[in-house]
Amino acid sequence: MDMAEIAIIGGGPAGLMAAETLASSGHGVTVYDAMPTVGRKFLLAGKSGLNLTHAEDYDSFRRRFGAAGDRLRPALDDFTPAQIRDWAAGLGTETFVGSSQRVFPVAMKASPLLRAWLARLDAAGIKIVKRHRWVGLKDGALVFETPTGQISTQADAVLLALGGASWPRLGSDGSWTHILAQHGVEIAGLLPANCGFDVAWSDYFRERFAGMPVKSVIASSDAGTIQGEFVITQHGVEGSLIYAHAAALRDKLLREGTARLVLDLAPGRDHSRLAQDLDRARGKASFSNRLRKAARLDSVKVSLLKELAGPDDLADAAGQARSIKQLPLTLSRPRPIEEAISSAGGIRWSAINGNYMLKSLPGIFAAGEMLDWEAPTGGYLLTACLATGRAAAHGIRAWLGQR
Image (cartoon, rainbow, N blue to C red; front, side, top):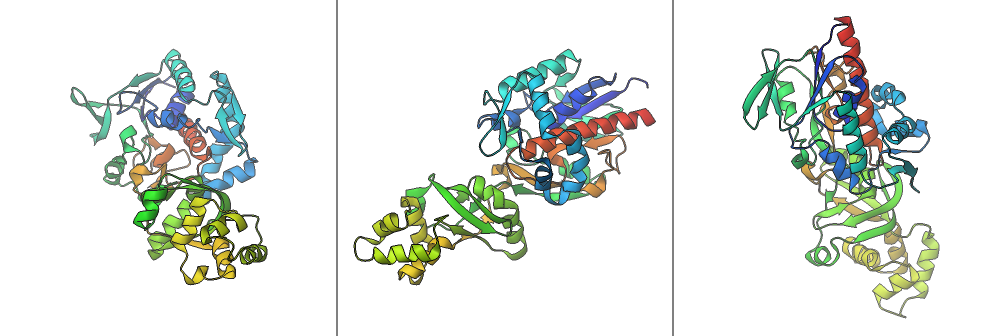
């Protein structure tokens, strides 16, 4: 096989994993990134500990990717959560499994892993070129905007790993969708995923409780019934429990214009017993104190109940208990994609072949969040980015070998 020049556009997890996978191929590999440094979103994720992957049983793990699960499975099978932990250990990053089965570096930081990873790529001869923003294709060449002006370069194979459209200040702004659409690549519109939602709070509630967590609640939607916690914001709600429902809520808002979560503010408390306890406490204290003592609700849950339940719902103990166990939270819209942890949509699976090559642009491959899949938080996002970067690299090697 003759030596080829491979361009990887995007220095995030998918692009860097593809570069590592191609390092032993004998080809020249150059990673281009628009930002002054690579891995910026990777480092941001590391501020909360860097959730690398998830340690639940693998059959459950692969079902977290919804409709895209079957298409992603070969890539995930080839780079499983256990293999990701081994890969991290090979870079000097030992990991541990938290109580939620999420996997984190023992150091709870992304920077040591990224430094070791970049050192490995440098030792393997991978070139990383920064401040090069890809702006399109012209006569078969890649066109970049650079600090010194526009340049063009040729490559025998190209991997696009430009991310979605969340956190654009870190480099992924979704501008590539327009470029690829002009070349006949089918794109599903990018949408916020793992995002917060707007709620029409009263001024009093917003000013008093924005920033406060609502702990130990159960939320139900089309996504199922899930226990966890969320945070009240100036605009509405966000947090891990909201993110777990985000795809179902977003899609229902798009279909019907309205969506709601049903909250159980007192998990583990039986409705009838709760009603009895509230009835017995009647007249002994203020309404708020009765809720705190008889229903064991903290101040934010008491105020949330008052904010969302109508006067008739709270008129007696039975209604109060019913509202505590089935409190509707109406959502008006998802927060903007720029605020989302990740994005849904992207290059449709019908637009790529089994090797992650674009059908309308032979020799150009895609991986990571550019593809039309989404997953909840918990290590699933990063795992799939790494796995598809690796799979696309294998696809590049196979295609170059067939030329």
